[in-house]
Amino acid sequence: MIRCSVGTAKVLGLNNIKTDALPTTAYLMVGEHCKFNCAFCAQARESRSKTNLLSRIVWPEFQEHEVVQGLQIPEAQKVMQRVCFQVVQDGKALEEAKNLVTTIKNESPNMPICVSAGPRSLTEIQDLLKHGVDRVSLALDAATPEVFALAKDGSWENRYELLIEAAGKFPGHIGTHLIVGLGETEEEMVKIIQDMYDKGINVALFAFTPVKGTRMEQSPKPELNHYRRIQVALYLIRRKYARADEFIFRAGRIVSFSMHLDQLWDYLSSGEAFQTSGCSGCNRPYYNESPREEFYNYPRPLTPEETKKSWQELVSGLEK
Image (cartoon, rainbow, N blue to C red; front, side):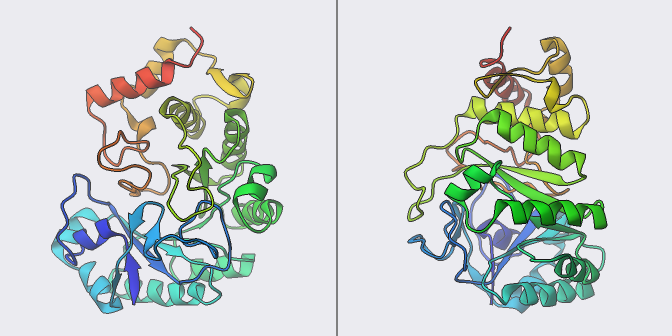
């Protein structure tokens, strides 16, 4: 059995849910009963959440052959741009993921595959790449060791060191996740984003999402204007339009990107900065919000009205 996000199942012809935004990546999850105890995660060791949740997304189970066959149907091949494995840290899921990567590569040799996992060594990362994975993501999640100690499990320093070593040995193949709203300041988040891109590590940005049954279920989501500032910082850094040390902070919050607003608008007017970040083809619809809410990460190109609204949310907190 293998779990896939409910939206992925729709694209693969395995269910018939109604949705306004289809995933452009096939999100598959392997493993169960995670050994770690992250405070925000539905799959955490002591979580009381439903076992079929990751963030706020439902992940139903299907037979492996159903999922592999679903990836071959014309409707899926028109939509899906990559496969992404979410590997639960249960001690054996990484091997299961490798086997599934091989199976999918045999059927779809040109399909890019990424694995979001917790490999413990460069050897394990190299093994994933040899199996045909084009990107391995080691989720740092927390911007600082102090925030990591409150929200995560394990060692921030160890994960950071492995990330840096891996990026040096396998350039262009390493990514990480960062979650806005775990307790860090904007300045702390922006500095780690800059550090990641200086090291050649691709960043996927998430908004903290409280999930019932987790230790952080009562913690608030980040304000949209707060998230917009981090989104724009990441976009400017990724595109090399600006660097974190050029931004101006007050009490840890971004108050200026050190450029005229007309120049900033020129960079942001396409709306791309407000779309989902991460691997190419990854759009993660409704991962951080319900269909009734405004998107933190838009899973598609924005309309002109949505771009203007996101811009207004951004500049409401900047110094004029």
